[in-house]
Each structure stands twice: as structure tokens, then as C-alpha cells.
Length: 401
Image (cartoon, rainbow, N blue to C red):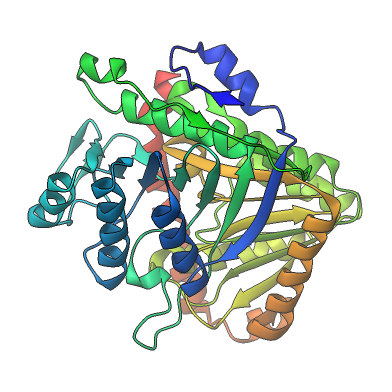
């Protein structure tokens, strides 16, 4: 089958295409750390025609150099390589590092906000993290390009996942990569750039996969809708693994209603966080979770960075979307949904093992017995600060809609 990706597609057609599951896919859940980066470099080294890579954080460390070297090798064998990085989160990337990529033939661009400086940012974040090779193979999740997400120098990687896909979903993700590349430039000539024709053979396996995006400014709220579908459809159990867990009123209402229906809800949250104020704010939410009979587990082995959910051994989602208003209203996010019983069951079993062997179960009794009144004041203060910052950050974009 000859695949040509058209970029002149209406917004309604894009929204409609992202709401539909693709059928012919082969999928695998990939753990962060060595497993992820080994597969990532392998995909780059095996690419023949085209690579779209877009990520939030790309750093000049051992892991960043490993991935950059692979992209350079691909460009030098005449693979068309397009690398798009968030203009704020990756701004520390040195100019000589970028120059080395460009000199090798890598097409490099920033996704830039409206206004930014080293300490100030105004505009959307491009928060998704994915790579597509030859419009046929993709790897999408929550993992940035940095040593923190890798098993390196004796340090355990932050807990995270990505979905590896071969087939129709990868082709759709390639289109998104192409469109993001074009839309990130003010140069109209870029919109006329030509892409190579890629032979795309669908795998024999059938697995329902859809690409989901959130971009409030563009009126895309697909990931939020996926979570709403989960809360409304679940009849037995839901497991949420989330970093920076501060769900808004709509999500909290749906979670509470699901719990009242008898759905067993479990959340796996960060026992160790890279943002202390976010950790305190999450702990303030524990009171609400207890009131709604939602079980709490804290992951203790390393920083929890993953964003993954599953319900009833039917469905799962993984990607860049955090359960807070920044992801809902101010960032460009990307998730992959899988509607497949055996696959969802395997994901749930992996989360069972994490909860039972690598987490601390936080009960109402243990929480209150280990939380002083001063700590509770800190938690409430952190929650109010975070909510205020979220309001400031998202107000502009809500006004735009």
C-alpha cells in the first residue's frame, strides 16, 4: 500500500480521525529506562526514509548524546529527520549541540511560546513525547530524553512508560508529527515542503488503537474525553497511575460518581517527587480521596513520572497527559488508547505488581497519624498556591476558546 500523508486537512476531519480506533496494529508496552532507550535507538538505526521526533525535554547528557548520535547517523544515510523540541523546557540545550545536529542534516526546530525568557514562560507547552519512523513504527508516552529517564550510572530511571506501535496508528501519528512541524513555523514556505513516499505494510494482528490529543486552543480535548469515558463506563475497577495528580472539579465529580456505583478505584501516586510543592498539594487531595473510598498507593523506588490508566481489563491509555488543569487547558498533550482485553489485563497485572511490591498503601489511619497539624497547613497552602498558579496559567487559554 502506498501511503501519502496530506497536510491540508480540515480541523473537523482531524478531530473525527482522532476519535476513531485504528484496527491493524501490533502493540507493546515499553518500560522507561534501558528498555525504552534501547528500542528508541534501534528504531532510529533501522529507519530508511523518514523520522519525526518531538519531545518536551532534550538534554545534553549521556542519554541525550546517545539519541542525538543516532539521529545524526540516520541523517547521514539520507533519512529525512525532523526534530521538534519545546522552546522552554529544552532551552538549556547548548548551541554547539544543536549545530552538530543541523550540520549532519537533521531538520531542527523549536516549538516556541508567545513570550519566554530563562525564568518566564507565556504560551502553550508542547508536552507530548513521541517518535515515528517510516510512518510505520511509533513510540509514544511520557518519557523525555534525559538521564533522569534512563538507567544510567547506577541510578534507577524515573517510573514511566511508552506504547510501541506498528501499523495504522503509527501512520496517523506520523501525520500529527508532520502537521506539528509545519504549524510550529511562521515561514509559509515550510508548509510546502515535500515528504517522501513510504511503503506501509499493515501487520496481520488486529488491535484497536487510537491517537488522542489535548490542545485547548485548537479545541481538541480528546484525552480528557477518554478519561471521562473511562469514569462513566467502568463497572468493576479503575487504576490510575499519575504524576502531579491534581484533578479538576469535573474529573473529581466523575471519579466520585464511579465510586458510588461500586467501582473500585485505586490511584498510584508519587512517594518521591521532583517538585516538593506538587507533592504537598497532592497530599492535601488525600482527604477527598478518603471521603470517596479511593485507595491510595505511593510509589517509593524512584520518582514517579508516568501517566497511565486502565479499567475493567478492557482498555488502557498512556502518554504525556497529567491529571491536572495544565494538561487539560494549557499544554499540547498526546496519549495512545488501546481497546483490547488481553493487553489491558496485562497492564493491570503490571500495576498490581507495582502497587503490591513497590508501593506503600496509604490508609486514612496511617495518613492522619503521621501528619501533624503543621504539615496539614503546609499541604493546604501548597494546594492553594498550585491551584492559583494553574488558574493564572490557564486563564488566557480559556478566554481564547
